[in-house]
Image (cartoon, rainbow, N blue to C red; front, side, top):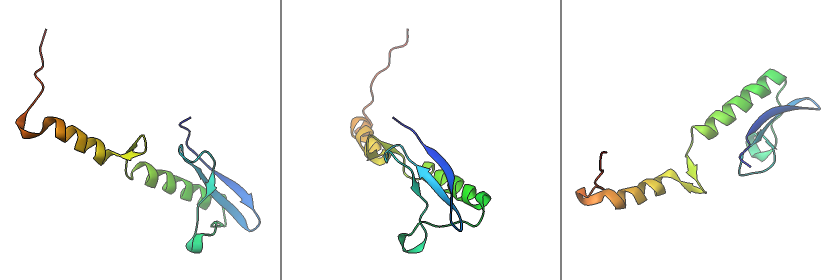
Length: 91
């Protein structure tokens, strides 16, 4: 199912910012330097990291069934290249 989620989880010393993307199936923490889960001192800072992570994902490379959009654009260009177009009839 296409389900995205972002939330915080309290841990010792602060909060983890958790992100779940449709292709992963489970939430994972935002990672800091060295690949370790980053601990945010407040819940607000963790929520800001969740927002930044989701926006970075949505504004990144768009995908279609595991392919990047550029491959779909290339397929469309092969159909319409060399000035050929599909005639459209108006009724």
